[in-house]
Image (tube, rainbow, N blue to C red):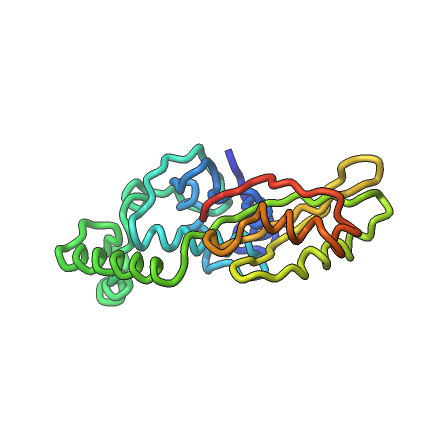
Length: 230
Protein backbone atom coordinates (compact mmCIF):
# COMPACT_ATOMS: atom_id res chain seq x y z
CA UNK A 1 0.00 0.00 0.00
CA UNK A 2 1.41 3.38 -1.04
CA UNK A 3 1.48 6.22 1.52
CA UNK A 4 2.14 9.93 1.08
CA UNK A 5 2.51 12.91 3.44
CA UNK A 6 0.54 16.13 2.87
CA UNK A 7 0.59 16.50 -0.92
CA UNK A 8 0.21 20.26 -0.73
CA UNK A 9 3.68 20.58 0.80
CA UNK A 10 7.05 20.47 -0.96
CA UNK A 11 7.92 17.23 0.85
CA UNK A 12 4.68 15.57 -0.25
CA UNK A 13 5.06 16.67 -3.88
CA UNK A 14 8.67 15.53 -3.94
CA UNK A 15 7.73 12.07 -2.69
CA UNK A 16 4.89 11.84 -5.22
CA UNK A 17 7.25 12.89 -8.02
CA UNK A 18 9.82 10.26 -6.99
CA UNK A 19 7.08 7.61 -6.72
CA UNK A 20 5.98 8.34 -10.31
CA UNK A 21 9.51 8.31 -11.75
CA UNK A 22 9.10 4.70 -12.89
CA UNK A 23 5.29 4.43 -12.82
CA UNK A 24 2.40 5.62 -14.97
CA UNK A 25 -0.10 5.23 -12.12
CA UNK A 26 -0.06 5.32 -8.31
CA UNK A 27 -0.51 1.54 -8.13
CA UNK A 28 -0.84 -1.16 -10.78
CA UNK A 29 -0.93 -0.78 -14.55
CA UNK A 30 -4.18 1.13 -15.02
CA UNK A 31 -5.88 4.17 -13.52
CA UNK A 32 -7.71 3.24 -10.30
CA UNK A 33 -9.27 4.55 -7.09
CA UNK A 34 -5.73 5.09 -5.78
CA UNK A 35 -5.09 7.66 -8.50
CA UNK A 36 -8.35 9.44 -7.65
CA UNK A 37 -7.46 9.51 -3.94
CA UNK A 38 -4.13 11.20 -4.64
CA UNK A 39 -5.58 13.44 -7.38
CA UNK A 40 -8.32 14.69 -5.04
CA UNK A 41 -5.82 15.39 -2.26
CA UNK A 42 -3.99 17.93 -4.43
CA UNK A 43 -5.25 21.50 -4.00
CA UNK A 44 -3.82 22.48 -7.40
CA UNK A 45 -1.88 20.86 -10.28
CA UNK A 46 1.82 20.16 -9.55
CA UNK A 47 4.16 22.69 -11.15
CA UNK A 48 6.59 21.77 -13.93
CA UNK A 49 9.26 21.45 -11.23
CA UNK A 50 7.69 18.07 -10.43
CA UNK A 51 7.77 16.73 -13.99
CA UNK A 52 6.55 13.19 -13.22
CA UNK A 53 3.74 14.31 -10.91
CA UNK A 54 2.66 16.98 -13.42
CA UNK A 55 2.53 14.44 -16.27
CA UNK A 56 0.49 12.02 -14.14
CA UNK A 57 -1.90 14.76 -12.94
CA UNK A 58 -2.70 15.91 -16.50
CA UNK A 59 -3.26 12.31 -17.60
CA UNK A 60 -5.70 11.55 -14.75
CA UNK A 61 -7.47 14.88 -15.28
CA UNK A 62 -8.02 13.97 -18.94
CA UNK A 63 -9.34 10.50 -18.03
CA UNK A 64 -11.84 11.97 -15.57
CA UNK A 65 -13.11 14.47 -18.13
CA UNK A 66 -13.56 11.87 -20.85
CA UNK A 67 -14.31 8.41 -19.50
CA UNK A 68 -13.84 8.15 -15.73
CA UNK A 69 -11.70 5.62 -13.84
CA UNK A 70 -12.85 2.09 -13.01
CA UNK A 71 -9.79 0.32 -11.54
CA UNK A 72 -10.06 -0.86 -7.93
CA UNK A 73 -6.43 -0.17 -6.93
CA UNK A 74 -4.53 -1.80 -4.07
CA UNK A 75 -4.88 0.94 -1.48
CA UNK A 76 -3.22 4.29 -0.85
CA UNK A 77 -2.97 6.58 2.18
CA UNK A 78 -2.67 10.37 1.91
CA UNK A 79 -2.48 12.51 5.03
CA UNK A 80 -5.57 14.67 5.37
CA UNK A 81 -7.52 13.14 2.45
CA UNK A 82 -11.04 11.73 2.61
CA UNK A 83 -12.11 8.34 1.17
CA UNK A 84 -13.20 8.42 -2.48
CA UNK A 85 -16.71 7.22 -3.35
CA UNK A 86 -17.59 4.87 -6.18
CA UNK A 87 -19.44 7.67 -7.97
CA UNK A 88 -16.40 9.93 -7.87
CA UNK A 89 -14.26 7.24 -9.48
CA UNK A 90 -16.63 6.09 -12.19
CA UNK A 91 -18.28 9.33 -13.30
CA UNK A 92 -16.52 12.15 -15.20
CA UNK A 93 -17.10 15.54 -13.55
CA UNK A 94 -20.08 17.40 -15.04
CA UNK A 95 -19.18 20.47 -17.09
CA UNK A 96 -21.47 22.81 -15.13
CA UNK A 97 -20.86 21.51 -11.58
CA UNK A 98 -19.06 24.76 -10.62
CA UNK A 99 -22.01 26.87 -11.79
CA UNK A 100 -24.42 24.72 -9.80
CA UNK A 101 -22.32 25.17 -6.67
CA UNK A 102 -22.46 28.95 -7.12
CA UNK A 103 -26.25 28.93 -7.42
CA UNK A 104 -27.09 26.67 -4.49
CA UNK A 105 -25.93 26.23 -0.92
CA UNK A 106 -22.90 23.93 -0.67
CA UNK A 107 -24.73 21.50 1.63
CA UNK A 108 -27.44 20.90 -0.96
CA UNK A 109 -25.27 20.31 -4.02
CA UNK A 110 -24.64 16.75 -5.19
CA UNK A 111 -21.66 17.05 -7.54
CA UNK A 112 -21.82 13.37 -8.40
CA UNK A 113 -25.56 13.01 -8.87
CA UNK A 114 -27.22 11.49 -11.91
CA UNK A 115 -26.40 13.31 -15.15
CA UNK A 116 -29.14 15.06 -17.07
CA UNK A 117 -29.65 14.35 -20.77
CA UNK A 118 -28.07 17.73 -21.57
CA UNK A 119 -24.99 16.89 -19.49
CA UNK A 120 -24.62 13.47 -21.10
CA UNK A 121 -24.85 15.00 -24.56
CA UNK A 122 -22.29 17.68 -23.69
CA UNK A 123 -19.90 15.07 -22.26
CA UNK A 124 -20.19 12.94 -25.41
CA UNK A 125 -19.51 15.96 -27.62
CA UNK A 126 -16.45 16.91 -25.55
CA UNK A 127 -15.09 13.36 -25.70
CA UNK A 128 -15.53 13.22 -29.49
CA UNK A 129 -13.85 16.60 -29.87
CA UNK A 130 -10.88 15.63 -27.69
CA UNK A 131 -10.36 12.34 -29.53
CA UNK A 132 -10.51 14.02 -32.94
CA UNK A 133 -8.14 16.78 -31.86
CA UNK A 134 -5.64 14.34 -30.34
CA UNK A 135 -5.64 12.15 -33.43
CA UNK A 136 -4.90 15.12 -35.66
CA UNK A 137 -2.18 16.65 -33.51
CA UNK A 138 0.05 13.70 -32.61
CA UNK A 139 0.30 10.00 -31.99
CA UNK A 140 0.52 8.39 -28.56
CA UNK A 141 3.33 9.07 -26.11
CA UNK A 142 5.44 6.82 -23.89
CA UNK A 143 7.56 7.39 -20.81
CA UNK A 144 10.91 5.58 -20.78
CA UNK A 145 13.32 5.08 -17.87
CA UNK A 146 16.91 4.56 -19.03
CA UNK A 147 20.00 3.39 -17.11
CA UNK A 148 23.21 4.91 -18.49
CA UNK A 149 26.46 3.44 -17.15
CA UNK A 150 29.88 5.16 -17.24
CA UNK A 151 33.20 3.50 -18.02
CA UNK A 152 34.55 3.72 -14.47
CA UNK A 153 34.48 5.65 -11.21
CA UNK A 154 36.61 8.43 -12.72
CA UNK A 155 34.02 9.36 -15.34
CA UNK A 156 32.66 12.89 -14.82
CA UNK A 157 28.96 12.15 -14.27
CA UNK A 158 27.98 15.81 -14.62
CA UNK A 159 29.51 15.95 -18.10
CA UNK A 160 27.94 12.57 -18.90
CA UNK A 161 24.46 13.91 -18.09
CA UNK A 162 25.14 17.12 -20.04
CA UNK A 163 26.14 15.02 -23.05
CA UNK A 164 22.97 12.91 -22.77
CA UNK A 165 20.70 15.94 -22.48
CA UNK A 166 22.44 17.55 -25.47
CA UNK A 167 20.67 15.00 -27.68
CA UNK A 168 17.75 16.85 -29.27
CA UNK A 169 15.13 15.21 -31.48
CA UNK A 170 11.61 16.10 -32.49
CA UNK A 171 9.31 14.23 -30.10
CA UNK A 172 12.00 13.63 -27.43
CA UNK A 173 11.72 15.32 -24.02
CA UNK A 174 14.22 14.66 -21.20
CA UNK A 175 12.81 14.56 -17.66
CA UNK A 176 14.00 13.91 -14.11
CA UNK A 177 17.28 12.13 -13.38
CA UNK A 178 19.32 10.80 -10.48
CA UNK A 179 22.60 9.02 -9.80
CA UNK A 180 22.33 5.45 -8.50
CA UNK A 181 25.28 3.57 -6.90
CA UNK A 182 26.19 0.31 -8.65
CA UNK A 183 29.26 -0.68 -6.60
CA UNK A 184 33.01 -0.06 -6.33
CA UNK A 185 32.43 3.70 -6.20
CA UNK A 186 30.70 3.70 -9.60
CA UNK A 187 27.34 5.40 -10.10
CA UNK A 188 24.99 5.14 -13.06
CA UNK A 189 22.71 7.87 -14.42
CA UNK A 190 19.02 6.97 -14.30
CA UNK A 191 17.01 9.37 -16.47
CA UNK A 192 13.40 9.64 -17.60
CA UNK A 193 12.45 10.53 -21.17
CA UNK A 194 9.05 11.16 -22.74
CA UNK A 195 8.73 10.34 -26.45
CA UNK A 196 6.17 10.71 -29.21
CA UNK A 197 5.88 7.13 -30.43
CA UNK A 198 5.66 7.89 -34.16
CA UNK A 199 8.67 10.23 -34.06
CA UNK A 200 11.20 8.57 -31.78
CA UNK A 201 12.56 5.03 -31.51
CA UNK A 202 14.38 4.65 -28.19
CA UNK A 203 16.37 1.65 -29.47
CA UNK A 204 17.54 3.63 -32.50
CA UNK A 205 18.32 6.69 -30.39
CA UNK A 206 20.49 4.63 -28.03
CA UNK A 207 22.29 2.89 -30.91
CA UNK A 208 22.86 5.97 -33.07
CA UNK A 209 23.14 8.76 -30.48
CA UNK A 210 23.95 7.60 -26.94
CA UNK A 211 26.68 5.05 -27.69
CA UNK A 212 28.62 6.79 -30.45
CA UNK A 213 31.17 9.60 -30.51
CA UNK A 214 31.52 11.95 -28.77
CA UNK A 215 29.11 10.73 -26.06
CA UNK A 216 30.68 7.27 -25.84
CA UNK A 217 33.66 9.02 -24.24
CA UNK A 218 31.52 8.94 -21.09
CA UNK A 219 28.90 6.24 -21.78
CA UNK A 220 29.82 2.57 -21.52
CA UNK A 221 26.31 1.09 -21.99
CA UNK A 222 22.59 1.87 -21.83
CA UNK A 223 19.61 -0.20 -20.68
CA UNK A 224 15.86 0.46 -20.89
CA UNK A 225 14.52 -0.13 -17.37
CA UNK A 226 10.84 0.72 -17.91
CA UNK A 227 8.68 1.60 -20.91
CA UNK A 228 5.10 2.74 -20.32
CA UNK A 229 2.45 4.13 -22.64
CA UNK A 230 1.01 7.47 -21.48
